[in-house]
Length: 467
Ligand code: OOG
Ligand code: NI
Image (cartoon, rainbow, N blue to C red; front, side):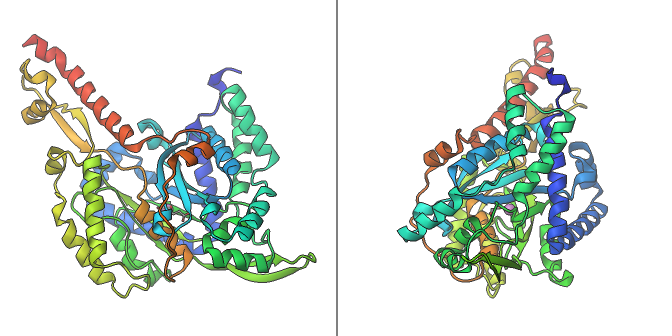
């Protein structure tokens, strides 16, 4: 088959993301409410700022502004993780970044499967934050063994899904009909199952070891645990959630409100308690409940360089030394005040952020520039900016933040004090289990920036040589 007859991976991803959205809205009605609220706030924000609207029209697809940007799942074994890598590759999603959550009291490590190129991101930026359970961080050896046996016995992919992944790999893609079947089959993996894989007693033991272990081990598959649309005003949505009958987490994760947004701000509503049933050893079912699924929103800013990121991490840490946000929201105001105060040390205008090497920017030739570029300036991007020949725009951060992710996990783990684990990042082990190395996010952003600089220098070179 010729590659021309294959459905593009971007199209498969877009259809997967739309299918997930409609499934989740049906399964979790509060999520539908959140989506409507986001759409309402986004359209108000756009009406109030025509500049933003123009900019989005030019750089983005304005009509898809309130669509999902990411979701999250948790798997139990290396085999599940590596099969997921193959599944996501069919949709043009590749593992970027390594996140160790053990430090934050969650026994998993993670990556994000996402589109990588600019063009792919623009068509559909959907990503899936994917965590692998680390059973070896659990002290009770007997329980560990039981959990391993339950996980080893389950198959989270349908036969058809596996066959289509193999087909896509063998022939280099899927035709339209196969692509459609593939999306339907993959959806099955992320569906909610209200009948557990384990007895009520085992569920309780897993739950007592850590709620997350119960969530990963007890069910037939890695149900999608949240989806996350993009909001243009996260503070407004956070404030309006309660009026709409949904209960937000205490504070927005990440940096404070700023004129020049950096990295990623996120908030979520608390996971809902849902009815499930557990299978007794005699085959009968016993009813119980499980808390797993929630909704989240995100607002993204500029990607930071290692220097910028180090400053961000330091300021966040400094804030948390003064005050840690309590899950019940009792000190939310004080936390936000401390955060805003500490972050005064992070420059809040694009020129300074760029000059100090804190963020990544995309450089482009100013179309209307009619001046002359002297030959000496032609190889110097700073000189070209000073001349007005080149402009720079922030490169959007497309990845995640471990401290924030831990806070988001918490919205589904309940409000009780989080557990302590010995921090043990193990990227190599994760990559072994995954079956490939993860892309280094910093190298990736640096590459985007560098190639935009080279394009400018190239475009302006003839003028320089002519002078
Ligand atoms: C994933 C939490 C991380 C985010 O947005 O940081 C995440 C999970 O709860 O499984 O999705
Ligand atoms: Ni999330």
